[in-house]
Length: 231
Ligand SMILES: Nc1ncnc2c1ncn2[C@@H]1O[C@H](COP(=O)(O)OP(=O)(O)O)[C@@H](O)[C@H]1O
Ligand SMILES: [Mg+2]
Image 1 (tube, rainbow, N blue to C red):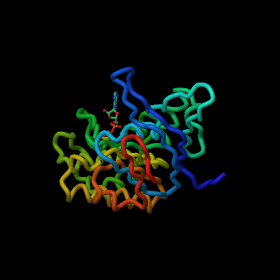
Image 2 (image 1 turned 90 degrees about the vertical axis):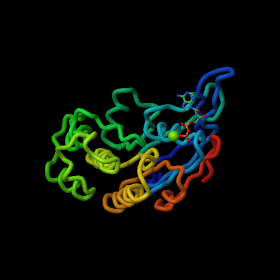
Image 3 (image 1 turned 90 degrees about the horizontal axis):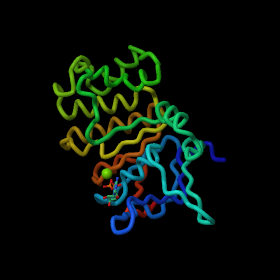
Image 4 (image 1 turned 135 degrees about the horizontal axis):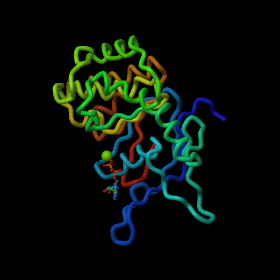
């Protein structure tokens, strides 16, 4: 067993709908990602990037295979996540995975600092004030700590979402077009920050993007075309 493997997926298919409305979003995907890698998943709109990321993040499951077909495998840190029950899975996800979405997903009624420490609260843990300060400073948003999302720029909101994904020091950070709503300057800054996170904490980052320039920040690019992964 290779201890350095973070993600191992094999024979992943994901079909939405039935009959005429059927979409085979993922046709057959198999690949692995090592610990500490920064991987970009690139592909056109509709190619299956978000579907794949949701499966890696354990918030969706691949199609089940009945009979003798090759069974899907999703292993995160060597854990066979398809075998976990809901409670176990949500605890695993909360502790080990951090998500960053394109539309930030901040809670409007909470300040920046409150939004960032939310994952810890959900896990009934106290936030380390010093770590929060250092993290916010490193992302250039410490001045925003008492601001509500609507009082911040898009770049500040996205950096708050990045901080929220990193506060619990997850082993795996998943980002779905994290820079899609930002101008080039802010977008590149977020990419640089993600790269630093990998270097500083040996976190593994999987970033979905349709922007080739953004993908250049990654150590490795995985392309996806019409539900088929090309490594
Ligand atoms: N919940 C859903 N129900 C039905 N079809 C979906 C759903 N989510 C995605 N799809 C379809 O699956 C395909 C892949 O979508 P998605 O993974 O969102 O692609 P991407 O993120 O690369 O744009 C698209 O054809 C999309 O329309
Ligand atoms: Mg998408």
